[in-house]
Length: 263
Image (cartoon, rainbow, N blue to C red; front, side, top):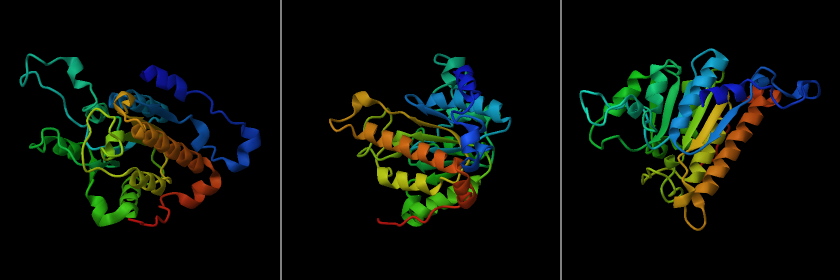
């Protein structure tokens, strides 16, 4: 998959430079923006490998999820029966592997919406996070800081210039809004809250994104999960387009738009 992402990422962007030169941030438009829809969260790893090679620098990850996804995998001495090299590559270890491969900008990455530990009792996955340079925003932090406070902390952590990979696991949403996923967790954010946070961080230098762990077979009659995922994709694409316009790029870098808190 990394080769496929490299091939896509190396293509010329689909715009006429002569006609749009005055309205486009040419530096930002140099490479196509890779957006993946899924599916298993492990697809983030090949995307990060490709982006790291394209931009020739570590990538900051802004990760919305109920879980850290920084599990280090099984060790042979801990579980001889189940251990294999392949067991370390899964949806729960994607960012651990990315950190081990030097793909991540240590100190500029962030998890948001966390509300579940790997075992329920151990804090090992949270400790792994700290070692890999992730900042953690718990789901309950929105009650203290509000939507705008969450967005401000993400911007302050990441900045406006470093290449950012935006990774959104649909289970960051409460199960009431996104039931069709493999590891649903109660007590998550609403679709509206997540959308408002995404709008608040549109000054980030997003070079790739994914919206993953959507499982339509488990959706209800009204397809709330798929509808939420589609809206999230729309918000991400809109933010990328706005960042690429020179006026917006100059006016909104490293700033959050004022977000009216209606809750």
